[in-house]
Every structure is written in structure tokens, then in C-alpha cells.
Length: 316
Image 1 (cartoon, rainbow, N blue to C red):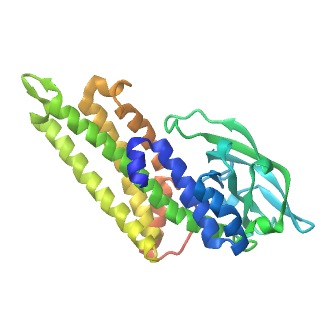
Image 2: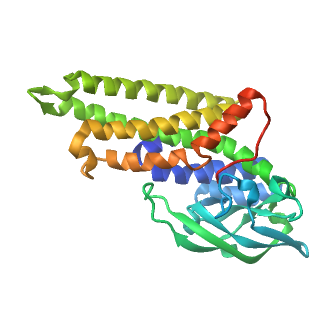
Image 3: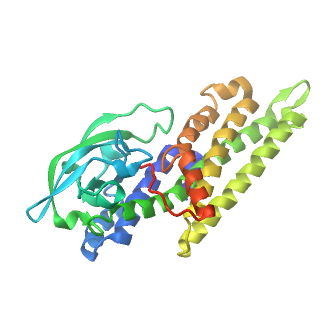
């Protein structure tokens, strides 16, 4: 579903991906019965949009260094801090936000997850981005927000378990998004090559164009198999950290390369807004960055294949 939506509009694709895999599914997986019955139905009906608030200005790939704090306050918590690059925050009705509940414990072990409402946060900025312009990306602050104990998702101090499990699945969604972008670019390039004529023949008859399209089709097929394998393993309850990282790494880099090749096949037209391939090119780049950069994916893969254990690194 994410692949097909992103084939048309990757900004809508990421909105759906965040809403479903980064917010709704963690509540289903880690929430209490009361939390599931309270928060999931409005999300499922589309009455509320979900936002995943992990990243901070000083806490990107090293998400364990986040500074947003949650201190006990009566029978609840008082939360303060700032988050950056949060998709759909300006329109969100439910926030999955991560804060440090144990300031004396460095790194991931002192972090907890909370479910917040719009009145608990204030959006401070809307980013102007290279691509994905149908999806908003915001900075926000939480200013001494008081929430009940029932807003703690999972156990205190176990928030990073929630975040890492969420990102393991989220990477597969972003890989599917990248796959859809790449497929869309290939479709336009192929159709153009079969219509555009130069030197008395269709440009699809030139070997240089044929080889470009052959490479594009092959790499997109390879990306699709990696993405579907990772999704199948997740669906069947099998370990999928390594497979998800491989799918995201390969699919995102394929999208960035193949959207560039699509522009090359269209030539000057590809550089204009008359055709959509320039949008695909701009949209593709972010898939190498969010939900874990390509460099982080390589670290995840390397630690898995070498048996070096886990390292808490993630991009929110």
C-alpha cells in the first residue's frame, strides 16, 4: 500500500507511514487495554493523525542523547523539551513522544515513551524542504505539560525498546516508499523513451537508453524483493532488523540513483516541472536520511552479520 501511494505522491506516503507504523502500531503493541481502546479507534478512523516525536536538535542518529525530560508530578508526569523534524506535527491529534524519565541514567536506559495530545505541544516552525512538499515537517516544544500516569506507554525506562521496535518496522515502510518513487520514475522514463524521437527514431532504440532502462528495471526489482522479504518476515513474527536495514539501504539508494537516471533520459524536459521526474528526484533523497541514515543502516547490518550486538542508534 505504501509503495503504491508513494508511486503517486511520496509526501502522502510518508504521512500514512508515520500515522500507521510509527504511532498506531506501537500503541497496539505496547499499550494497555485502556490505551488501545482510547487512542487507536480515532487513529484508525482517520479522526486523528499520528506524529512520532523522537528527534531533537542535538539528538539525531544518536537518539539516546535526547534531552526532553519527564519528571514525576503527583500521579503523573511533567514534560518539557523540544523536538525537531517531526512529520505532520502541525495537524497531529496524537503524539508518540520520547522523554528522559531518569536523568541519572545516560543513554537509552533512562528514556520513556508517552502519548500526548495537541494541547500538550506547541508547533514552533514549519520546515521548507527539498521535497515531500505535500507532507509538513515541524519543530515543536513541550512547555511544562502535565499528563497523567496513564499516558506512559509501556514501562518506565523502556521507551527505547518502543522506539527501536517501531523503527525496525518503519524502515520497511520507508523502503516501500523509496520503491514506489523509483517505480514511478522508471514508468515515466520508459514511456518517454518509447515516444521521443531523435535522429529519425525513438530514443528507446538507442543502446545507451536501453541500458539505462535495463539497469533501472533490474535494480528496482532487486529492491522490491528485499522490501517484500523484510515485510514478510515482520508479518510472520520473525526477526527483521537486518532485513529491514538492507531493504531501506538498497531501496533508498536505488530511488536516488534511478530518479536521476529518469531525468537524464528525459533530458531538458526532465529538469522542468512539465514532467514529474524532478519531483521524484527531490522526494527520493530524504529516504536515505530519515528513519535511520544509510550510514546507520550499514552499521546495523554490520553488527548483525558480525554478531557484535546492538548499538542504540536511530533517526526519529
